[in-house]
Length: 283
Image: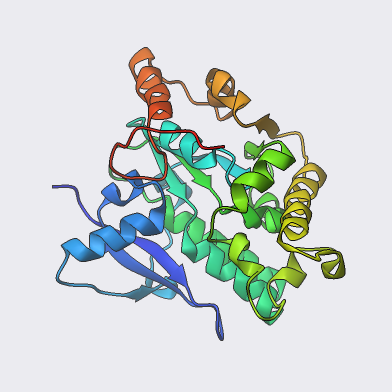
């Protein structure tokens, strides 16, 4: 049985942003999304203890897993598939779209927090995921798509860390998104624009759902391009599936032939499902 570790699970948005942690098995990272794994682990445990970030011990860098990279992306562009592929290696711990980071960044937007406070707490959250002890050798963070609007926080903390941005042809992306829900897709249906105004340059130009989607897609792309710092790799879906070795090299990862075969096999399945369900393309 794997040892449990104390990982951040979410950050409150209302009031001072407080990050909470729970004791979890590293198996939590095997799920398509980190908090999906958290929910599954909770169902398996009769006890649930909550800790605050302030209760966590700050470990020296030598006891933390090295961050090999950050994945930023436009939604519905294969980022979850890439995360599953990279995380399939026994050497990689993949942190996929953690609500602890989302909550902190939303709190920053809603409550006009000082940047210095956000940087300090964001670093504490990230380092809490880096605790070693389960034979992993590296860690990669796949962020929620809208996090790219606040990419400067990550660059200030880790200016030399490799990162990639996954994009997709705009019209195909719009057609995919308008039939889905969740994340920034749902923001259009909010009765007020408290969320939209932080991500759309001109809300008056969003006269319908499709124009809103086009605007926010362009915003993702604009922020990623503006953030180029010499450590980036821009790829497109589905073409990036043909250059996985290039992505591995960018993140300074060396997969064995067996690891690469296992990673590529994930293309056959629905990446957002924990159980192996064969993929059927609809867009």
